Image 1 (tube, helix red, strand yellow):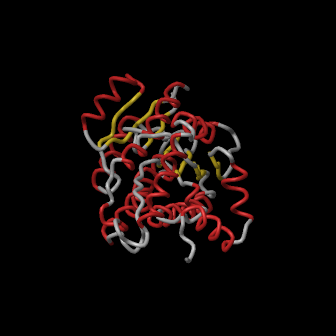
Image 2 (spheres, one colour):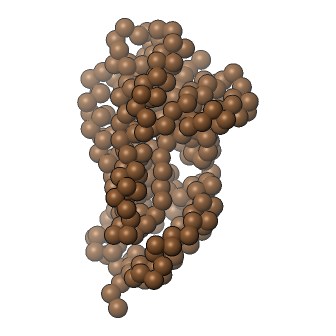
Amino acid sequence: MKNVVVTGVSTGIGRGTAGVMIGKGWHVFGSVRNEDDGHQLKKEFGKAFTPLIFDVQDNDAILSASIEVRKCLAGKTLDGLVNNAGSSMPDPLLLQTVEDFRKQIDINLVGMFAVTRAFAPLLGTDQTLIGSKGRIINLSSVAGKTGFPFMGAFSAAKYGVEGFSEALRRELQMIGIDVIIIGPGSVNTATWDKLENTSFDHVDGTIWDKPFRTFNKWMSESGRKGYSPEQVGKVIATALIVSRPHARYTVLKGRFLNATLPSLLPSRTIDRILGKKLGLLPK
């Protein structure tokens, strides 16, 4: 049986990925932030699932989890690490607190680095372990290629994920550990319920009030029409299993319109398109 560590499995893409990988006969070590979630997932997935209790902002807890996995593997390598845990909350950049901006960078980027560093020995940098080298799957986003207004902190973190992943893949090729980026677009998760139930009172009456509300409505509607977490999980499974995976997988509906075309257009053109849609153009 092959083994994979997946971070952030309580909900969304992480949970969907855990289900897909277990369905393919893999054992999943899944990170959750509290024991109740761990017990619930263990009950749902059974013996093929082992909960790991840690927050990606807690380096000591991450290291303890890596020791736990090492004991379970009993001298064998880990086949995969899926860095999925993340957080996103929109806000106009100049109204966002420094603490909230830093938190999104810390969770989405620094946390990914901390987890990768802790589990890299099990993936094969520890030459004493037996087995083939593992793969690292890093969750980025379409926001890691396009800077959307009101998602500056998240986009900055995901741009960082892209650079981190590219550099890491090139450093690890001499060892044989591959690093693959997954860049989802809208995914139908509970995130959109949370967004609709957040007041954002601090935006009221500012110049960004109406554009920000328009953006949130657009994002919620698009999100609920997006792929399911399980569909993204299937792409992650492909990246883990196929003999020659792509370096990056873009997972979104309307790929040409929403990813390919924006990559070909001048940045100023994208400025005007988004500005017109959201009411951000000068009066």
